[in-house]
Length: 263
Ligand SMILES: *[C@@H]1O[C@H](CO)[C@@H](O)[C@H](O)[C@H]1NC(C)=O
Ligand SMILES: *[C@@H]1O[C@H](CO)[C@@H](O)[C@H](O)[C@H]1NC(C)=O
Ligand SMILES: *[C@@H]1O[C@H](CO)[C@@H](O)[C@H](O)[C@H]1NC(C)=O
Image (cartoon, rainbow, N blue to C red; front, side, top):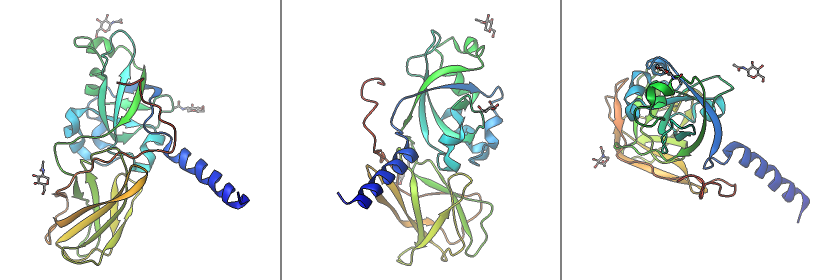
């Protein structure tokens, strides 16, 4: 094999495997919890008070490596602890915040921490400030369609900043374009490093359709929301339904690791 191609493959392998880090695997770590249930509502992902309505308040802050500069916002995880007070299924949480702790992978909202326990054991569980757990990223399942909220920093006519909400599946949105409905003049949006936020200062006049690229399997895949998503008279703070949902699961370039230890 040509040496430079071989070298390129090695480098790509290293880069690829270190960025994806085998997200389907079960990891051993520790969690703690926020004593106040409101702590997470000002979270780094910027969901505000809406966060407490996600998933019955089962939300969590993660360390920076899972938060991934905001790309991890909205990702879902199943967490289980192991002592005799712990339930077998554990809890399913949505990432809404970042925690700088380097001893725990997650800091859980109180309802999520209590839900790690068997029925009736929740108050004793809280005697532990830190718990050994196993966790795994899982697909998110919402009863709603993928949606966007128009962020406060948007400015008419052409400065549009949106945040994704209710993103299903177990993947990342890696590209977003907007165009006027019926037009093929797509304008790309740029991801901001503060949560699942995308912006453009070249938004066409509405009504707007959208298309996104997600990682499905090992490849990129287009998701089309090619009807009106955002009306001409869009408003800051309004939530718009894309009429589609994502169910893809990204595969990683590492060997399967989750076949029988996690049911
Ligand atoms: C994080 O780790 C560093 C190096 O191990 C340590 O010095 C620091 O005190 C830790 N910070 C926290 C908040 O535990
Ligand atoms: C845990 O806390 C409860 C009060 O919330 C207390 O009654 C119980 O004795 C504590 N259990 C342990 C094992 O410390
Ligand atoms: C999702 O979008 C489809 C297509 O617009 C619509 O028929 C459906 O009612 C929406 N689902 C929910 C839960 O809103």
